Image (cartoon, rainbow, N blue to C red; front, side, top):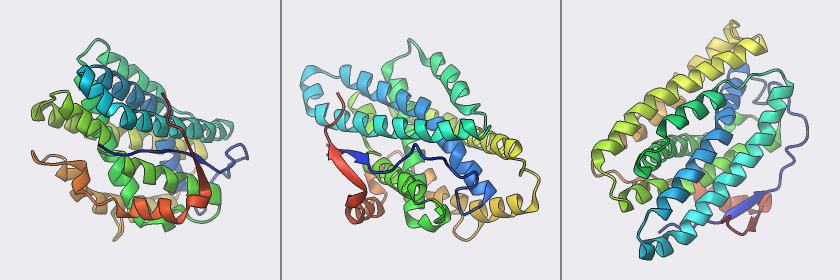
Length: 274
């Protein structure tokens, strides 16, 4: 089992957010904003899936899972709350969140399905967040230094995503989930995630008036496909999920542990959510 603690981040998310908070870069800002827009709806789904999945376990297993499930829920609930505050600033800036409502409608298609489907979907998304988180922790300079709150928010969130990356995966196995459906949902989620993040990023850039600027496209090419590009460096860990013998803990999480140890002054520990 994974020992998870809940942390209260010591940042002021009430203060206004600069329009191009990410080093003045329109593309990077739009992409991170797009990801944030998906989090409140997505993380509520993850919370519900893991909570309901744990309830479907045999009584003796539920007790063994209790602490990890509570830690997972507490961490995700904290992420959801802070990104809700973050997204409120984006609303003020005139950005339109199309991803969240679209994801909510898509989630309703799973209503009444075996809880293992919900947990498999969660495990697939958690793999995406874990590999993106690890990439960001190894490349924190992409966040710039224009707004220290945002740097701390994203790196703290990344560290915790890496920390709890195996919870839904292990729960799916404990529920008797099979390999075929794990891979089926991962392929589906991979397609949906890439389309969703690109659609929302383009929408953000269009609303921002920077979609057709040369600097935007140059930044996108470098940030995604450059030597330290997001796509280039996360493709291999993404593919590893397709192996029959894959487990999230096979992927390195040193950067997460190091960030949490070095930045303990940025948060306080609190109890897990029930």
